[in-house]
Length: 247
Length: 183
Image 1 (spheres, rainbow over the protein chains, first blue to last red):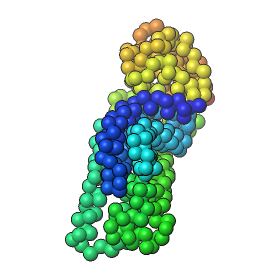
Image 2: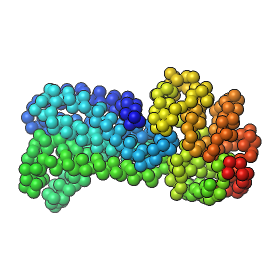
Image 3: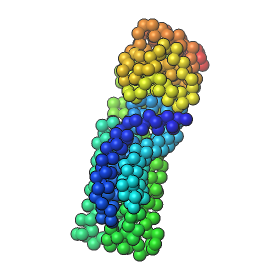
Image 4: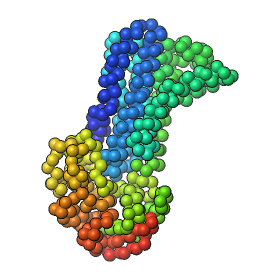
């Protein structure tokens, strides 16, 4: 089956290397200890590494296709099926590559296994779906990697800092900040894991309180659901983008 | 068949709308739009038209880390075809694509292309081939249709002189000659 062969080829690239590099990170995070604080920190850092892996490996996959065998793929599959195959395979590769690190962390900290796994897998999947889009839109492989790192820096590192300072200096409602959190696919993937360790969303402060009051006991499902929505939305965007771009 | 491709690029606007047969030779100077036309026909570039043509680029493109055998298997799965490696003497299946000379890699591409029954869009198909494999290509391409060949190669142009001819300049057809071969 074509998808299985593409998966096996892609797994041998950057994804497995970065996935292996996440193992010492998982060991270091497990050494932080148990409890809410260390768990939230570990989940957040695993999520950040997983989303970076997802983005960069997906950009690599798209450009291996574009510089290698895009013509027969498009001739055989057509653009829509190609985009679907590429998104599905890159997502599966990213999830596979982060599994050893999240399994290692889970073995060392069984009480935090579920939040860590949720954050790593959702972040890898969201990153891969975003990475495929970046790979399709980028004019060269170099642009693809540069845009991928820039997007990750903006969405995973800078976004929430900007949001925090904005809410400090400007009168922004809790609902608006919650909407801003939900508007970032990497943030919702990370919070999808954090919420499993912190079902009352205490780590989100006033926003968590607002969401918990609004959504009640199901508030911890908001972010994983939003992450799943984002992954599907990005996959659909990939199909549209592939149908409109020169490849 | 009707060959339609319209695309605005920085240097020129490709604007082709011609009625031709199933064996088409596309000629023209550098930058006249030959490769753009073939990419449009193959659906790699968005030009308002295009179909399931298999585009074979002038310079072989393949994942460098893959062995020839694995690359061919991948293409066999993608194209649902059994690749006849004997067509272009591809007997170096255990070597990596990145280790091959351009001519050897091109022979892999051509073996795959001519193993399919898909319409072919061949862009400078003789590039990088030595005399023996150019002759082999001429034998195979002449018995094939539908096919579009874009080239500067005088020997190939001469050999395919009975085909329909489309001459481009600045992205527009300046000469269309119907030969009724393969029409």
